[in-house]
Image (cartoon, rainbow, N blue to C red):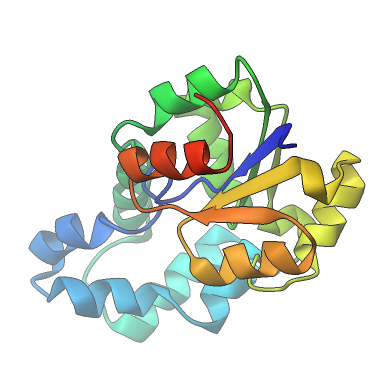
Length: 199
């Protein structure tokens, strides 16, 4: 029986980096796909696992991509993108919180989360929020899920994990946690009902 719902944050509840390429395409005069692809890679993962800080990551990104933008401008664009909410999800979360305990597990940098917490008060609805920089590993590492269960003292069979990446859902299942791949709020409602989770 499901008692605990564990949500991803980016692209499930609010925008993460996806979407920032639209604003930057205008600023930089470059194709959106080229811009968003420049963010990914080894240093991005090091940022999310707390091995490097945001300024180091941004400075190296600007240098390697040869972008004509300042560190401050890029950081502001990223933060503006975090304000965007995924349609229909926050009312759904508010409803679910009346019947279930809600938790958050997200791949994110410390600096970005510190900002996000100031602009999205709905995050206070979660019993506990957990991030990759605290675990020093991302959700693509299956070891994060047993560690999450240990830290929160939760039973896997009582949890349901919601994430927009199938790989992360699959990794949660390796730890005995059932999951739903998120596409949109309506699909999530339907899939929750199939698992006897009622909004």
